[in-house]
Image (cartoon, rainbow, N blue to C red):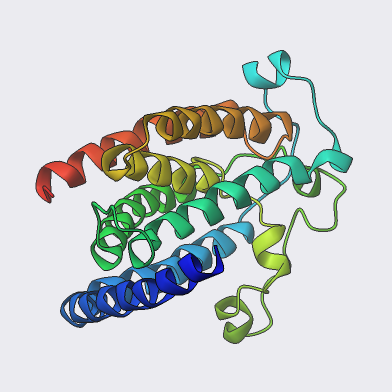
Length: 247
């Protein structure tokens, strides 16, 4: 048994080394796209933080999801975040699986170029949407009476650029339509649907996306409309990107 492991180890390292050379070459050709995608994640975060200054708390809007799903409460706030972290982490690990496993259908650099294309287009639409109309946030820290529901005018431009990290990221308000968590979730699930090889994992991933949607609503982090709009917008964006950039 130990001898078999010892023999496999050199093969694994050769596989990693060979794959790394290929990916470095692809990164050299596509680094501008990867960098642009990463920079836009900051721009999206900056826009989401900026709309918090415009947020005005008020009565929670009537919502069919709130009527149908019981409220989880603040003590179960972690449930949707835990599931999202699992989806996020699992997908990232999968995109790097060609470095280890022999069976591959993707190149890590190229798959992330496509992922960033999905994300950037979806996030541009999201920014336009939540700046067009600011709804009173249903989340606990965005409700009337919470000290975090409204932000005082920034004391400096640097305060805005730093996004009040990490509190500004965790306790944002106003960036509702449509859900950023669902953008990432659906982009990851659709990407695996397109390039993944395991049918059972594809079905399980879609199930997780549905569960994630329900948990977000039950946690009162978003209105149902934020989730519904995310489902059809992200899928239409992915369809459009795949049509323009076949591969």
